[in-house]
Length: 147
Image 1 (tube, one colour):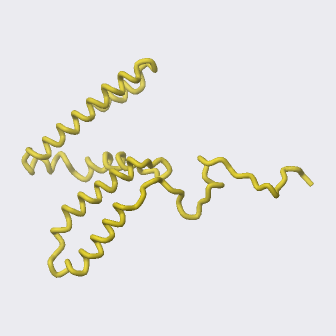
Image 2: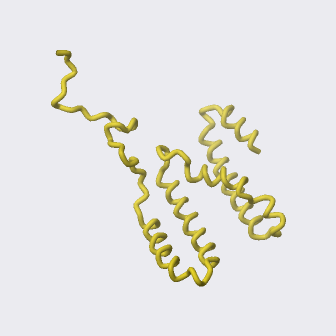
Image 3: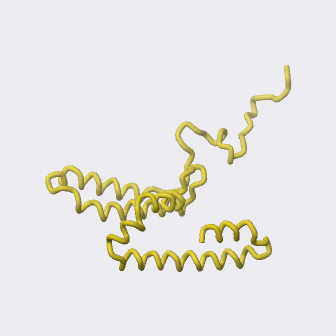
C-alpha cells in the first residue's frame, strides 16, 4: 500500500488532486476503523506482533509532528489526547504506597497541560525578528546608508 500511495502522490495530475485527496481521506478513515476493530478483537499474542513500539512510533511522531516549527493546533490536540489516554491507562498501575505522593501532583499537571492554549509559540530566546516566518521589523533609528 505504501508504494501505491507514494506512486499516487507523484503521478496524480494537479487537476485530479481534489478527487484523489477525497478518496485518500475515505481510505484512511476506513483503515483507522479497521485497525481499531483489529485492536479490539484480535488476541494479545497477535497484537503484540502488530502494534509494537517500533511500528507505532513513526505514526505517533507523524501525528504530532516532530519539527516544532511545523506543529499546528491539530498536532497539539492529538498529543494532549495521547497524554490523557496514557494517564488513564497508566495511573492504576502506580503502586498504592506511591499514590498519595504522585497522584495529586500528576492529576494537577495533566489538567494544567490539557488546559493550556496549544497555539504554536516561538521557542524561548527567539523573538519575532529572528523568526524566519515573520517579516523582520525595521528599526526606525537605523539607517542603511554608509557613513
